[in-house]
Structures are given as structure tokens and as C-alpha cells.
Length: 186
Image (cartoon, rainbow, N blue to C red):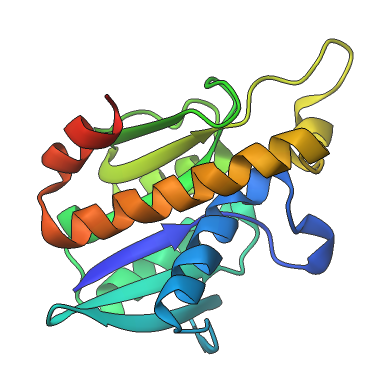
């Protein structure tokens, strides 16, 4: 069994914001497979999909970004998901808008959702897809920027990025994560 967690904040006011790109990608996968996220457990919204005999949990923590580990760790324990079977998708200020980077380990890089997850897992070693949102323009604070919505042109571009991230997740259903990294980081 695998778990794909998209990080974000719950509530309509956060829809299509930079900080919620993880939620958008999990929603996209749920739509792609026709498995709406309707179940709740451990303060998370989830659904279960089946792909070639494997079960995959799609999860959106409803704990707000900074407490993402409060949901994901109990989900992993309850469903007996190994660390190597976890994939976390989140926004990254250090990548240009729309650039994706797959990694198997790394620091939180200032991302509070990832800090929470590292604290709960006790390690920095877990699969991740970082989705670039760029740095805020001069004079704008990071919180205002990440909680702001994508500009119209950016959002149009992000649709193809969301689709590409969905493709990367699907590739992981079939191949080891290092192979998926080689394919999508190229």
C-alpha cells in the first residue's frame, strides 16, 4: 500500500493558492481515477484507489499546513504504510513557478508542513515532489505570497504542471521512485 499526501490548507479561501498546490494535485489524481476524497480519518480527507492490484491512499491533511505530520503519521501507522511507500507533494519557494523536483530526502528548507512531517517521522528520508512557486516579489511577505492565488497566466501554466505531477505519481505506481526521479527530473 502506498500513500500520496498533498499538503495545503483546508477551506475554500485557500483554493488555487500557491501553498495549496499539493491539494490541487491530489484532487487531480482523485478526479483522474474517479475516487472522490470523501472519507475522513485522523483529521485528514482521503480516498483509496486500486491500481494493478495495489492500494493507494490519496490524502489531504485538514490540520492546516503547519501541522501536516499530525495527520500523515497516524494515517501511516493505521494503514501500516512503510516510509518508502510515502510520497508528499508540496510547494517550493526555491524553484521557479511550475518547475518540479523529485527527491527521496532533504531538509524542510523552511517549509513548515515538511518540518512537521520530519518531526513526526523522525527522519528527512521520504519521497517528495516539490512544485515551484518562486519567491515573492520585493516588498511582499512570504505568508502573503504563498497564501495568495496564482495569477491567471500562472494558473493556466500550472494546469499542465498538475497533470505532469499526476503522471509522476502514476509512474511511481509502476516503478521504483529513483527511476521516476530520473524520468521527471530530466
